Amino acid sequence: MTAHIPLLDLGEQYDTIRDEVDAAIRRVVDSQRFILGPEVEAFEQALAAYLDDGREVVGCASGTDALLLSLKALDLEPGDEVIVPAFTFFATAGAVWNAGLKPVFCDVESEHFNLTARTVAEVWTERTRAVIAVHLFGQMAVMDELVALAEARGASLIEDAAQSIGAAQEGAPRGVATALSFFPSKNLGGFGDGGAVTSADPDFADRLRKLRVHGGHKMYHHEMVGTNSRLDALQAAVLAAKLPHLTDWTDARRLLATHYGEALADIPEVISPPVYPGNVHVYNQYTIRVRRRDALREYLSGQGIGTGVYYPVPLHVQECFAALGGRRGQFPVSETLCEEVLSLPVYPELGTERLLRVVSAIGRFYA
Image 1 (cartoon, rainbow, N blue to C red):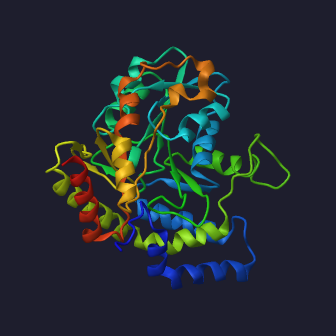
Image 2 (cartoon, rainbow, N blue to C red; image 1 turned 90 degrees about the vertical axis):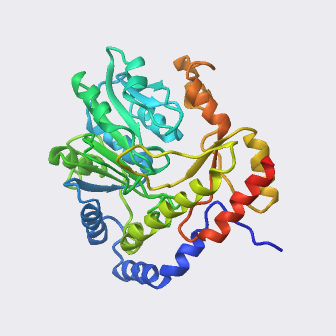
């Protein structure tokens, strides 16, 4: 019987670094220091060195909290508007709502799945105070145009890089903050939830450090109303053990993406994800566009091949945001993508042989 090909197999990754990760966990358990402390500080410093962009790293409890803390650190007024893409994970808009702000949705472009300066400008109002640029599936949005638009109109730009750690764009300006996620399925994933915010502004980073521990550096003294959003020492230790492997894992994902692109080019029903000029795509997901997506997914499942649909429902028509007045037909590209996108296995240990089995199965479906 042919072996199953999952969408993601974290067990294969763990098998390659078991001794390093287990030693890191034992170190924390032996220390009995589980909240912040040296493990978190060491990981923050190591990640800052890896990113090598002059930005401070502030660990927090999740990628969602990384967005929420970034928004709170902007010190906006209740009801201020924050523009977010209609095609992305829920947390991007949910964090805006939970910060007491109003999410305003915009469309994305059909090839790279990201918002653009044009789609943002189309929904801009006098209440717009910030934009969250999501670098979806591992590829950065076009930052020079987005930063220029935000700066010209006096708004802040936050980058949602939950899926794109290590992604790059030649000569790109950056937002005031970049939110990262260490959810287990991310390219750098922990053994539970975790996140971080990076910023080149020391004052902004200091506000984040206060906000993650109830709003103050000194226990029982609160300069602002913060929350409990600390990166666990256990997670920091696991992530620090994994971090030295991230470059190789990213290179493996990019090589697999190249093989996918070449092999899928012979199947006209499949649109492979292109890369912006000057971008380094890190492929947290390898997401194609296809007709009869749901039928293809069912067929691949029957062939023992795992896939994912990110995302089946655009945010502007989610039930929880009904009060914002979103309607079908409002953002046609996002709505079409929700019907056509399909993510294929692209984890570093997949290998060419299993990748070609995936491609062969897709070819048989459309034959």
